[in-house]
Image 1: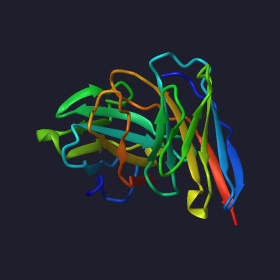
Image 2 (image 1 turned 30 degrees about the vertical axis):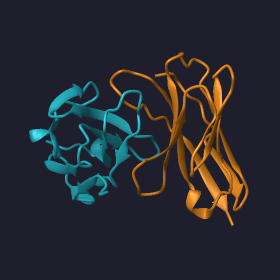
Image 3 (image 1 turned 60 degrees about the horizontal axis):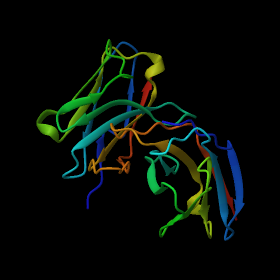
Length: 110
Length: 115
């Protein structure tokens, strides 16, 4: 899996958009970008994933740059319940495993 | 749909004692994973099962950790004897093993404290 780099922590005001960056400059052509989040005292939760194109679901949007070297997870209207550690993972192995880094602690403030 | 179940949720033991954790994956999920998460770090994969066979156990400390998944459903992870550095949250996850899908469903974890 390609190495990913994320900021250690970020703050966001409730109701505003949260934009979480991730650098994956060594990503290979067949690797996907996956985002998970982990709310305190819970297991990680899948959010969204993409390969080349931008993706949107009910939880978030994922913007992947054209060269695929970086991506941004967007939570359009952050709530206090979105306070969590967000993990960006670049993966494409045939054994279907995930390698987690330390992630970004997003704190949504009232 | 029921999620991944784990028990116990919390366990406190003394070093050199043994402990076992249980996981019941989502029904129909062929792949099961055990992760160790030390405070302040992301989860680290310990072992991956496909049905009842081991796919990857390269990061499992085999001198003290063991895991099994009899009948390809439930799984147990055992530590014997425990060390202080084994204090962590042990997470179980399962997936359907669909091509090009890395979506895993995680249980709530078992928090182990070794004193």
